[in-house]
Amino acid sequence: MLLPPVCPSPHTNMIYEKVDQPVEVLAAFRKDRAEPMTFKWGNRYYQVKKINLVHTEREGREKVYYFSVSDDTAAFRLSFRSETLAWRLEEMCETTLNRKRWGKSDTAT
Image 1 (cartoon, one colour):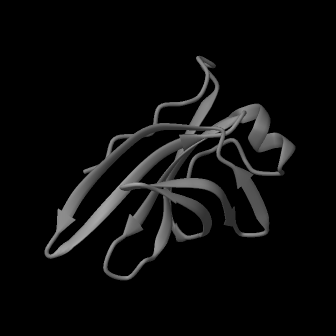
Image 2 (cartoon, helix red, strand yellow; image 1 turned 90 degrees about the vertical axis):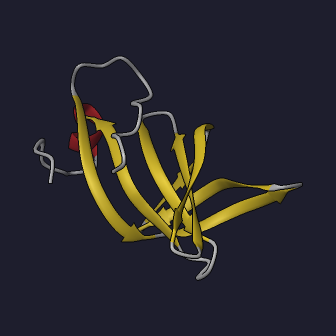
Image 3 (cartoon, one colour; image 1 turned 90 degrees about the horizontal axis):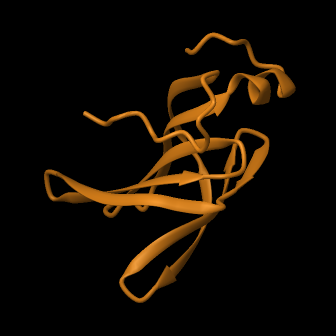
């Protein structure tokens, strides 16, 4: 079981949301690691400002890489599956101010 991502700031008005949706990712592959740089979820693009944590888990013979990343207003957990080469947005955490700006409700789904 995954833990919620670490939110990028100490705001008390943070909303955690499980997403579990496919995303398109622009990543750099450096030496022995991948680094997500930008991802597209829905009609929006998100620029990764910081990679906070990377860890792997095995699901059968497949290795799944998890990236906890953040931009200026939110934190995200992305996953990359080694067998299918598929990226997913697993979870996110954002300020309620940011949610209002993008027309979302204040309740987590």
